[in-house]
Image 1: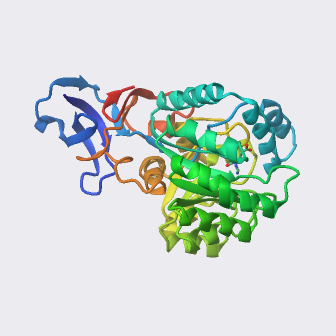
Image 2 (image 1 turned 90 degrees about the vertical axis):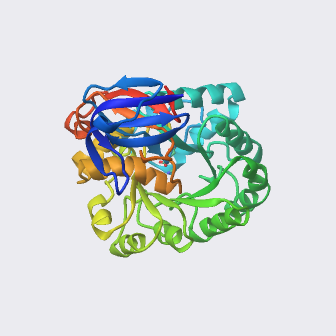
Length: 380
Ligand code: NIG
């Protein structure tokens, strides 16, 4: 079954050769894109959708979320807006609620959020464990996530549970917890931050994950300057996420590496933290991704469009840079070449905006602009 999407006013392909096309069309066959080019040269197809001059881009690739959780932290957010600073310790509140929730309740909440994201154009999504923090609860979080999302990350090293010795906890994360979770996950992550895991413990967690064949990710430099970025680059992590506190050496290290700097501007807003130096990262040549960091504590949004608008309006990124970071950048952070791009062979993840150009994402901030979405060739 082939579908021709035609009448595309502006087509962002993220493909070096195809570039951005005007008056374009693309053809989907099954779950893949099979043809991209000028509308006037489009081949016949079984089905035809005319988008009447609207802009089309690859579906968003949200490479950083924490969606396996229960409970609500609205009161913590309100207190923060009244001046209480954000602290990593709030994670423990969600851990308590998550442990008390049934599998069905966790799965239903996860699906609700994934559906909410898909309705706004997110077609590839990573999510993490990290609100279980016991072998049993981390393993069930990973198992539940694997049923619903594209990419699952083990974040047992999110916080040392209150009352537990940090070295004992790291030994559990690197031993029985990792053994139990590994069948369900592709990635391992660590919150390398004062108040969470120091450099040595972070390194131990990442190396244990690597020994189990997992790819590496790091939460780094979120609440203050620290070793997270340096460690991520040294170990060849696919991404280091947050990056709010970087010095010149961190920026140089990222620019000279394949580690993607994943920026989470909705989190910076929701925690009243500083924005990362996006302009300096891009100018230095680092690969940048944008993601929502959707979680109940520091960033409770599924809206990639909001992140793109904020990146443009507050972080000094151009619209092209922000859209690329939220699509191709996210794909790079997940080491995927099949998403974040619209070219023959790519997964048919197509996001049609109710706007003539992607510029409207920042020009009309806060306005829901998603018109139609296909994920792997299926209309959502
Ligand atoms: O990415 N930094 C650590 N983890 C989450 C926060 C989770 C929470 O506060 O519940 C983050 O911001």
